[in-house]
Image (tube, rainbow, N blue to C red; front, side, top):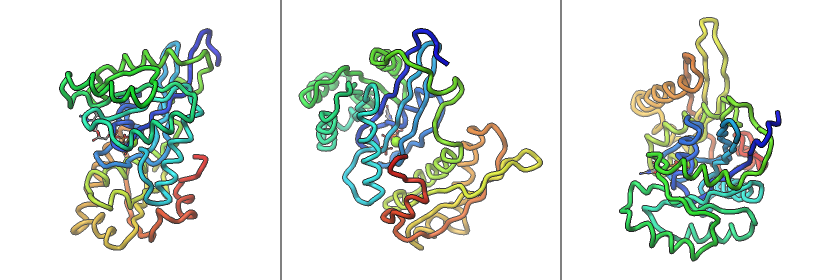
Length: 300
Ligand SMILES: Nc1nc2c(ncn2[C@@H]2O[C@H](COP(=O)(O)OP(=O)(O)OP(=O)(O)O)[C@@H](O)[C@H]2O)c(=O)[nH]1
Ligand SMILES: [Mg+2]
């Protein structure tokens, strides 16, 4: 449906792992569609978050944090982030103001020079720094790249996010409404549900375990009593990790289920019954076929 003077476009959010890309997108959309955690490399796929008003639609592309590759999955994640750069109206280069400028940001800035897309520098987590620290930090980043705009925000607290939205609008052409008013993401519900299960495990585990898990929804159906029955399988890379995820007398898995159920019920707006299984798939992060089965396609 083409409305008169309707502006729309795609905006990629890129940056190092853990800088708050998913937090920003969720804040703008007003609902959790991309999982968040304090572990780097939380996001693994490109996720569309759709922001629609009377006269504008911005489709945000949340991308995996760009990092040094450690596996085929890592390669896929970096490629997913870079592929978005040339296919959008604007790029938000998100940085963590409390961490400062590092090698990772320099690397990303170099990649940005390969495309013509306008880049907005977004300094996030300003709630964690002294106000005086902001200007010197901006000066450092300006030397890296000729940014179209520079906006400091706190994605977590919501500070200055409206100002960022205003800046983005300047770069949107007149265009169609890509998604209906009530659609907030491009991924099927099952993807978001699997991610919510994965998020709970990320919150409860440490070291290599967070990176070694993948979650897949094997079955989902509405029962006669209206309860949605969901069966999810958690894949790990080693037997020892299976033990960790299950926990003593199943305590960990039970807690994962309890916490995930709350988020999933919020998402679906109906009661659910969540059945969780843990399976070992040795070294799945380096196996092309398994990666494909789990939904990590080059074109995804
Ligand atoms: N204090 C503070 N913390 C924030 C802010 N934004 C995000 N965080 C925290 O930073 C951590 C990482 O947030 P994510 O949104 O998962 O980061 P990401 O950039 O999507 O990370 P990857 O998907 O791993 O690349 C979480 O613990 C967030 O709560 C902010 O504005 N202020
Ligand atoms: Mg993320």
